Image 1: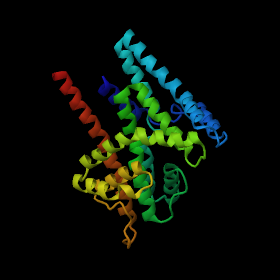
Image 2 (image 1 turned 120 degrees about the horizontal axis):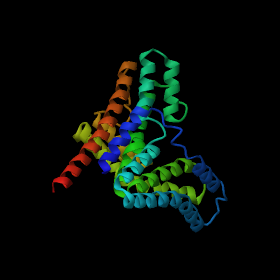
Image 3 (image 1 turned 90 degrees about the vertical axis):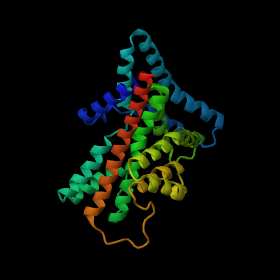
Image 4 (image 1 turned 120 degrees about the vertical axis):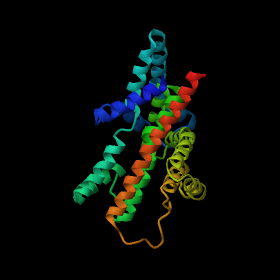
Length: 292
């Protein structure tokens, strides 16, 4: 049932196009902003209670819906799962964003390419071409986890409620960055905790989808170079799978935009293969369960 739900949700996401209007959390984010804007000296226990009051109502509601629909008619549970996944996958389509950037370069439209890069990176893109390429590659590896793989993992573990829980924790983590508040710090710890296992499964999937030996070696040698260790694991293993050193070379070769863009395209291809690998493994486990 989980496999059918996931395949249906991913298929619908591809054919429906942009779903940004569906994936809005304005009221939740406004509540989080009010929480993080309160006095930084607020007691830690109150911060815990406040975060619980933010997270639990939507998660418990979805869990209750899932249980109730299962009792009424099991196929309704699949429908709920598809709706929840379409809502909790990343705000935008990862492939569409990166392909728009690459298409702009192919047309020779540098201005549009820079705009697409800024939108994807969430800020002003680096001016140096090599730095821009590495930033885009890093972001692809992180975003395929945040938008898809982690949501899929928690959906498999806890059902639709798990997908909602991870998406809300990820949103809190994004809003908490740079905030001096106990609740903001707690939100960061929650994200680190809930991302820990899916990050490492994603890194292993990168290795299986690319150069296994290089990915594992890069994971071991370079992951601790990042302050956010979860991010370091994703980036190091992903670069290793592509047989690219995760650290910038001390003496870079002359800039070649076709080569740089090919690296971005290869990273997107790795991310795509990783998602399909995860689904293939789930299919094998499902078939194994049916046959047993």
